[in-house]
Amino acid sequence: MYNYNIEEILFDLKSDRKKKVILDTDAYNEIDDQFAIAYTVLSEKTLDVLGITAAPFLNYRCTSPEDGMLKSYEEIKKVIALTNSQKEIPVKRGARNFLVDEKTYSDSEAVDFIIEKALESDERIYVMGIGALTNIASALLKNPAIKDKVVIVWIGTHAPKTNLVEDFNMQQDFAASRVLFDSEAPVVLLPAQGCVSEVPIFRDELAREMPNKNKLCDYLYEILLEYHADTPEESGIIIWDVACIAAVALNDAVTFEMGPSPIVTKDIKMVYDPKRHPILTAVEVDGKKMFKDLFEKLHSVK
Image (cartoon, rainbow, N blue to C red; front, side, top):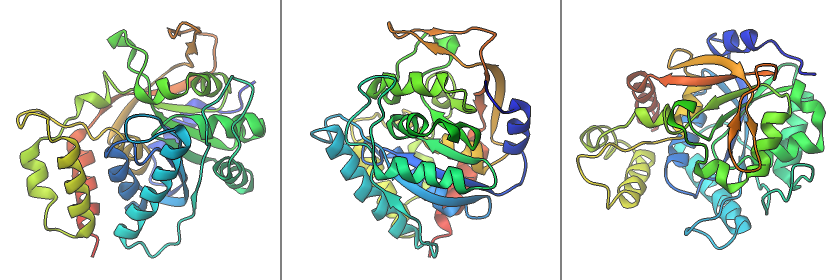
């Protein structure tokens, strides 16, 4: 039986209280994770960053889930260094393979780190997932007791109104998504299409805000332009993962609704049973507030 009040979690998200967080990221997958890592580290007034963990991924930028995780591990350290943070932030290697089923965890130092920090905390910690859920689901499988010590914030799947289910994060590890939604841990879900997709940023604004500010901004702008070299100039760019950070770090940027935790079926559909435990789902992201906050923090780096 779940052990939380979803309204209290929503109240906490909307409060000014400084939250303990762990960021789980497939940082080398594309370029939005790097923005999210910097945003997390630089949100020191509202986030107490306990550590950052590297998630596995598999696409053309790596040769295996393990290679993706290890490249992400190095990328995390690179971005942290560019923030010039005075805080020593632990970085942990994650799973080397995706889950084989919904009962078998993929062990790693990231999994043990999530469990350790959750169990030793005197308050719920926010575990922000911006990649496949492998590490987070593995921690829930290895020690189910942590469900009463965490809130999982994940950008994944799509809004029901889109009639879509599979996004990159979910496609990487379907078993892990089932573990999460069935775990009875509190979940804050940020759907990709139908929510985060609706806050693009355009090249003229990026050209004003990013280059020649500091080494961090120059690096983020360089990899963004490289990744989006074939994106038409007039097209908006979605820096997806920063919305996950804004949901916790910026208390007035994201609007949520309450509803039952979905069931992810074997044929990859989402079924909603009103008797299931409740979660929060983002329905709107205020892009102006989010990007204003992001750029102010990026510019603050000396």
